Length: 69
Image (cartoon, rainbow, N blue to C red; front, side):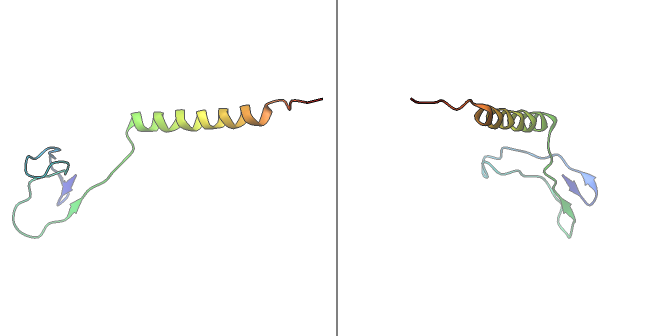
């Protein structure tokens, strides 16, 4: 979180605004930049999910056809 190009600490829990991210800003005009990025843990979880999907597709594709007769 940047206000006028400077990092600002954020608060995740305000008793009046539960669930919203709040941060202090002085009166006046400001440029606020909020960036939602991928954390290392989220990147690993995405990779594990993708790998799991590939494995499921391969298992279903390679499953031998059963013959009834």
